[in-house]
Length: 461
Image 1 (cartoon, rainbow, N blue to C red):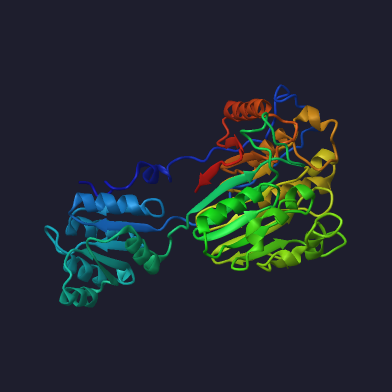
Image 2: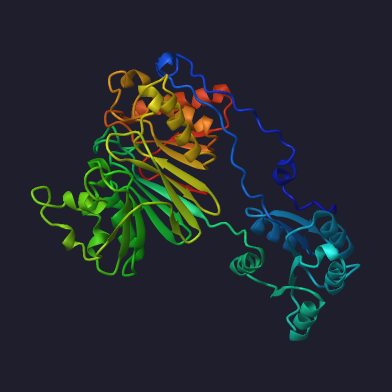
């Protein structure tokens, strides 16, 4: 067995693959009827550097153990393996890993000796070593630690125990992120037989970061989310942070119908920015005042906290930042950075260059939006109009399909979810628009996955 046998092909070729040059976005005039003269010119940015994966070397003579550990750790770390002591020692000295997971009883050189030799090397004296063995004697644990091991885990062990040990020693375990679309329509609900697949509810996206629950926007889709949460949590308390991008009715109209807000055991914090003439809390409360609604917010027995955003929001290891967008009134987009991935959400935005194509200020503002979403794993962005429709709806505060593709390519995002669908766009029309977007991206060789967000669609990172 060669030292790098357990390393994945992707891990071994990652550093060898040349980065493709990103060319300026030039859209063909045949693409969704675009007027090329109206398309804003995009500059390019270098993708921000991500922290390199930490490296783990497994030294174990059992092939099943090597395969299990490689699979369990491969999503979060660069993993290499060796099947005996001398081979492992040579690999460790060559690769300088962050952690070694070491068996004790192996051919040619046992684990105690491997640890001792590692500690004799000045460059490896601080290397983290986790002993993984079926020997459970207390005396062996003491001997291993005296030899220089940092921790000891007894086989068999479950995945959670392993990941917990590794995270304690070197960190690097990525928190899983999942999301579900509960509302994808823009402007107003559009239920009916012609919008069943893409959905008729207005914006609401559920995001799970580990055990933490985030809700982005409170359009009519939040009602069904509430019903789902009640079935999931039953009598347990529901805790969530709700992010409101702006307070036009299609983004807050579902809040009074979010049943968990009326239950005292639940805890919610609703976040948004100060309004044009009123505080965020005043704007949220206004839609539940007479003559618009029969009960006011005092009926919400969960007593939700209303917090105005004045800077980045930190929820554990998750950082949520916002950026002002170009839409009538005060509107922000969100960037959610976890230790595993980055999600960006732009619900309502009209490129500045669309309104003033030659202006230096417009170019700077469009560049700032691109920097805000730079390198995102997923960009959820409104794409409400075709270019032909935009001719009659200029200055309404929304983007076209081509605007959004240009932004995504410019910012080098990995996936683009087309969102905030126009109420008049049927499922059949959306299928056509999405296919045209995908075909255009493929024809230009852009490394971007593009899809149309649909109600009920779930994604995992």
